[in-house]
Image 1: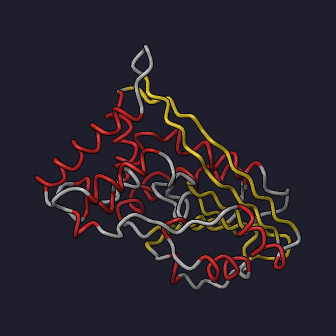
Image 2 (image 1 turned 30 degrees about the horizontal axis):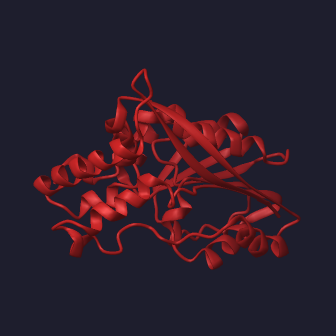
Length: 258
Protein backbone atom coordinates (compact mmCIF):
# COMPACT_ATOMS: atom_id res chain seq x y z
CA UNK A 1 0.00 0.00 0.00
CA UNK A 2 1.55 3.33 -1.00
CA UNK A 3 1.64 6.51 1.06
CA UNK A 4 -1.25 7.89 -1.04
CA UNK A 5 -3.55 5.53 0.84
CA UNK A 6 -3.11 7.46 4.11
CA UNK A 7 -4.23 10.94 4.95
CA UNK A 8 -0.75 12.35 4.46
CA UNK A 9 -0.04 15.83 5.82
CA UNK A 10 2.53 16.43 3.09
CA UNK A 11 0.04 15.68 0.32
CA UNK A 12 -2.67 17.80 1.93
CA UNK A 13 -0.37 20.79 2.28
CA UNK A 14 0.69 20.86 -1.38
CA UNK A 15 -2.08 23.46 -1.66
CA UNK A 16 -1.78 25.10 1.76
CA UNK A 17 -2.68 28.62 0.61
CA UNK A 18 -5.80 27.46 -1.23
CA UNK A 19 -6.94 25.22 1.63
CA UNK A 20 -6.36 27.88 4.28
CA UNK A 21 -8.16 30.76 2.55
CA UNK A 22 -11.67 29.44 3.39
CA UNK A 23 -10.88 29.21 7.11
CA UNK A 24 -9.71 32.82 7.09
CA UNK A 25 -12.99 33.84 5.45
CA UNK A 26 -14.94 31.78 7.99
CA UNK A 27 -13.21 33.25 11.03
CA UNK A 28 -13.68 36.77 9.68
CA UNK A 29 -17.47 36.30 9.87
CA UNK A 30 -17.61 35.31 13.56
CA UNK A 31 -19.17 37.92 15.88
CA UNK A 32 -16.58 39.63 18.06
CA UNK A 33 -16.25 38.04 21.49
CA UNK A 34 -13.57 37.27 24.05
CA UNK A 35 -12.37 33.76 23.18
CA UNK A 36 -10.83 32.06 26.19
CA UNK A 37 -11.23 28.44 25.10
CA UNK A 38 -11.37 27.17 21.54
CA UNK A 39 -11.14 23.83 19.78
CA UNK A 40 -10.19 23.06 16.18
CA UNK A 41 -12.03 19.92 15.07
CA UNK A 42 -10.27 18.17 12.21
CA UNK A 43 -7.24 20.40 12.64
CA UNK A 44 -5.21 18.57 9.99
CA UNK A 45 -1.53 19.59 9.94
CA UNK A 46 -2.24 22.75 11.93
CA UNK A 47 -2.82 25.33 9.21
CA UNK A 48 -6.35 26.02 10.43
CA UNK A 49 -5.18 26.07 14.07
CA UNK A 50 -2.55 28.64 13.20
CA UNK A 51 -5.22 30.81 11.62
CA UNK A 52 -7.48 30.30 14.64
CA UNK A 53 -4.66 31.37 16.98
CA UNK A 54 -4.20 34.60 15.02
CA UNK A 55 -7.95 35.24 15.27
CA UNK A 56 -8.07 34.56 19.03
CA UNK A 57 -4.67 35.46 20.51
CA UNK A 58 -4.27 34.29 24.07
CA UNK A 59 -6.98 31.61 23.83
CA UNK A 60 -6.37 28.11 25.13
CA UNK A 61 -6.66 26.04 21.93
CA UNK A 62 -6.90 22.29 21.44
CA UNK A 63 -6.67 20.64 18.03
CA UNK A 64 -8.25 17.27 17.23
CA UNK A 65 -7.84 15.00 14.23
CA UNK A 66 -8.37 11.30 13.58
CA UNK A 67 -5.06 11.03 11.67
CA UNK A 68 -1.91 10.47 13.69
CA UNK A 69 0.11 11.72 10.71
CA UNK A 70 -1.78 15.03 10.71
CA UNK A 71 -1.46 15.42 14.48
CA UNK A 72 2.29 14.80 14.31
CA UNK A 73 2.61 17.55 11.69
CA UNK A 74 0.46 19.92 13.77
CA UNK A 75 2.51 19.32 16.92
CA UNK A 76 5.70 20.06 15.03
CA UNK A 77 4.23 23.20 13.52
CA UNK A 78 2.63 24.57 16.71
CA UNK A 79 4.31 23.03 19.76
CA UNK A 80 2.69 25.59 22.07
CA UNK A 81 -0.76 24.04 21.60
CA UNK A 82 -2.24 20.69 22.55
CA UNK A 83 -3.15 18.28 19.74
CA UNK A 84 -4.93 14.97 20.25
CA UNK A 85 -5.78 12.05 17.99
CA UNK A 86 -9.54 11.85 18.39
CA UNK A 87 -12.72 10.89 16.53
CA UNK A 88 -15.18 13.80 16.28
CA UNK A 89 -18.16 11.45 16.41
CA UNK A 90 -17.16 10.26 19.90
CA UNK A 91 -15.55 13.47 21.21
CA UNK A 92 -17.15 14.13 24.61
CA UNK A 93 -15.35 17.15 26.13
CA UNK A 94 -18.08 19.19 27.83
CA UNK A 95 -16.69 22.67 27.19
CA UNK A 96 -17.79 25.37 27.44
CA UNK A 97 -15.99 26.88 24.45
CA UNK A 98 -16.28 30.38 23.08
CA UNK A 99 -15.35 29.01 19.65
CA UNK A 100 -15.62 25.59 18.02
CA UNK A 101 -14.00 25.54 14.58
CA UNK A 102 -14.64 22.74 12.09
CA UNK A 103 -12.97 23.50 8.78
CA UNK A 104 -13.48 21.00 5.93
CA UNK A 105 -14.08 18.02 8.21
CA UNK A 106 -17.74 17.54 9.20
CA UNK A 107 -18.63 16.32 5.70
CA UNK A 108 -16.89 13.09 6.76
CA UNK A 109 -18.89 12.72 9.98
CA UNK A 110 -22.38 11.16 9.81
CA UNK A 111 -25.50 12.11 11.77
CA UNK A 112 -25.54 15.89 11.37
CA UNK A 113 -29.04 16.09 12.83
CA UNK A 114 -27.49 15.02 16.16
CA UNK A 115 -23.91 16.21 15.73
CA UNK A 116 -24.56 19.90 15.14
CA UNK A 117 -26.92 20.40 18.12
CA UNK A 118 -24.48 18.52 20.35
CA UNK A 119 -21.67 20.87 19.30
CA UNK A 120 -23.85 23.92 20.01
CA UNK A 121 -24.47 22.57 23.51
CA UNK A 122 -20.71 22.73 24.16
CA UNK A 123 -20.65 26.49 23.48
CA UNK A 124 -20.56 29.15 26.16
CA UNK A 125 -23.32 31.81 25.90
CA UNK A 126 -22.31 34.06 23.01
CA UNK A 127 -19.92 31.43 21.68
CA UNK A 128 -19.92 30.35 18.04
CA UNK A 129 -19.77 27.12 16.07
CA UNK A 130 -17.92 27.94 12.83
CA UNK A 131 -18.16 25.31 10.08
CA UNK A 132 -16.91 25.11 6.52
CA UNK A 133 -17.66 22.09 4.33
CA UNK A 134 -16.93 21.38 0.68
CA UNK A 135 -20.18 21.53 -1.29
CA UNK A 136 -18.83 19.97 -4.46
CA UNK A 137 -20.40 16.54 -4.87
CA UNK A 138 -22.09 17.69 -8.08
CA UNK A 139 -18.85 19.03 -9.58
CA UNK A 140 -17.23 17.11 -12.48
CA UNK A 141 -14.32 15.98 -10.30
CA UNK A 142 -16.66 14.07 -7.98
CA UNK A 143 -19.00 12.85 -10.70
CA UNK A 144 -16.03 11.40 -12.58
CA UNK A 145 -14.66 9.88 -9.39
CA UNK A 146 -17.92 8.00 -8.90
CA UNK A 147 -17.97 6.89 -12.54
CA UNK A 148 -14.38 5.61 -12.54
CA UNK A 149 -15.05 3.76 -9.28
CA UNK A 150 -18.19 2.12 -10.69
CA UNK A 151 -16.75 1.02 -14.05
CA UNK A 152 -13.58 -0.88 -13.33
CA UNK A 153 -12.42 -4.19 -11.88
CA UNK A 154 -12.42 -2.49 -8.47
CA UNK A 155 -16.15 -1.62 -8.60
CA UNK A 156 -17.37 -4.16 -5.99
CA UNK A 157 -14.87 -2.94 -3.40
CA UNK A 158 -15.51 0.75 -4.05
CA UNK A 159 -19.29 0.65 -3.94
CA UNK A 160 -20.53 3.24 -1.44
CA UNK A 161 -17.07 4.61 -0.66
CA UNK A 162 -17.67 8.24 -1.59
CA UNK A 163 -19.43 10.47 0.88
CA UNK A 164 -22.99 11.12 -0.28
CA UNK A 165 -24.58 12.87 2.70
CA UNK A 166 -25.43 16.44 1.84
CA UNK A 167 -27.81 19.10 3.07
CA UNK A 168 -28.45 22.62 1.85
CA UNK A 169 -28.15 25.94 3.64
CA UNK A 170 -31.83 25.95 4.56
CA UNK A 171 -31.58 22.58 6.30
CA UNK A 172 -28.73 23.73 8.55
CA UNK A 173 -30.41 27.06 9.25
CA UNK A 174 -33.63 25.31 10.28
CA UNK A 175 -31.74 22.87 12.49
CA UNK A 176 -29.65 25.47 14.29
CA UNK A 177 -31.84 28.57 14.55
CA UNK A 178 -34.03 27.27 17.42
CA UNK A 179 -30.82 26.62 19.39
CA UNK A 180 -28.98 29.85 18.63
CA UNK A 181 -29.38 33.61 18.81
CA UNK A 182 -27.86 34.03 15.35
CA UNK A 183 -27.19 31.72 12.40
CA UNK A 184 -25.28 32.90 9.32
CA UNK A 185 -25.12 30.55 6.33
CA UNK A 186 -23.55 31.23 2.95
CA UNK A 187 -21.96 29.51 -0.04
CA UNK A 188 -18.83 30.58 -1.90
CA UNK A 189 -17.33 29.16 -5.09
CA UNK A 190 -13.54 29.52 -5.13
CA UNK A 191 -11.71 29.22 -8.43
CA UNK A 192 -8.26 27.81 -7.68
CA UNK A 193 -5.59 28.23 -10.37
CA UNK A 194 -3.54 25.02 -10.40
CA UNK A 195 -0.31 24.80 -12.38
CA UNK A 196 0.33 21.39 -13.90
CA UNK A 197 -2.87 20.58 -15.76
CA UNK A 198 -4.99 17.55 -14.93
CA UNK A 199 -2.24 16.07 -12.79
CA UNK A 200 -2.50 19.02 -10.41
CA UNK A 201 -6.26 18.47 -10.04
CA UNK A 202 -5.62 14.82 -9.18
CA UNK A 203 -2.93 15.86 -6.70
CA UNK A 204 -5.45 18.19 -5.04
CA UNK A 205 -7.95 15.38 -4.48
CA UNK A 206 -5.27 12.90 -3.36
CA UNK A 207 -5.20 14.93 -0.16
CA UNK A 208 -8.93 14.55 0.43
CA UNK A 209 -11.62 12.84 -1.66
CA UNK A 210 -9.42 10.25 -3.36
CA UNK A 211 -8.06 8.97 -0.07
CA UNK A 212 -10.77 6.40 0.79
CA UNK A 213 -10.82 5.07 -2.78
CA UNK A 214 -7.07 4.52 -2.90
CA UNK A 215 -7.11 2.95 0.56
CA UNK A 216 -9.21 0.07 -0.81
CA UNK A 217 -6.82 -0.73 -3.68
CA UNK A 218 -3.41 -2.36 -3.97
CA UNK A 219 -0.46 -0.53 -5.53
CA UNK A 220 -1.11 -1.64 -9.12
CA UNK A 221 -4.81 -0.86 -8.88
CA UNK A 222 -4.07 2.55 -7.43
CA UNK A 223 -1.94 3.46 -10.42
CA UNK A 224 -4.55 2.21 -12.89
CA UNK A 225 -7.33 4.01 -11.06
CA UNK A 226 -5.40 7.29 -10.91
CA UNK A 227 -4.48 7.13 -14.60
CA UNK A 228 -8.07 6.53 -15.64
CA UNK A 229 -9.28 9.31 -13.37
CA UNK A 230 -6.65 11.75 -14.65
CA UNK A 231 -7.59 11.00 -18.26
CA UNK A 232 -11.20 11.92 -17.50
CA UNK A 233 -10.18 14.98 -15.49
CA UNK A 234 -8.15 16.26 -18.45
CA UNK A 235 -11.32 16.27 -20.57
CA UNK A 236 -13.46 17.97 -17.92
CA UNK A 237 -10.91 20.60 -16.87
CA UNK A 238 -9.05 21.77 -19.97
CA UNK A 239 -5.93 23.80 -19.32
CA UNK A 240 -5.80 27.50 -20.13
CA UNK A 241 -3.25 28.91 -22.59
CA UNK A 242 -0.54 29.11 -19.91
CA UNK A 243 -1.12 25.51 -18.77
CA UNK A 244 -3.10 26.47 -15.67
CA UNK A 245 -6.29 24.65 -14.74
CA UNK A 246 -8.94 26.73 -12.99
CA UNK A 247 -10.61 24.43 -10.45
CA UNK A 248 -14.05 25.63 -9.27
CA UNK A 249 -14.61 24.60 -5.64
CA UNK A 250 -17.94 25.41 -3.91
CA UNK A 251 -17.95 25.55 -0.11
CA UNK A 252 -20.76 25.94 2.44
CA UNK A 253 -20.14 28.12 5.50
CA UNK A 254 -22.08 28.19 8.79
CA UNK A 255 -21.57 30.43 11.83
CA UNK A 256 -24.03 29.54 14.60
CA UNK A 257 -23.87 31.71 17.75
CA UNK A 258 -25.43 30.50 20.98
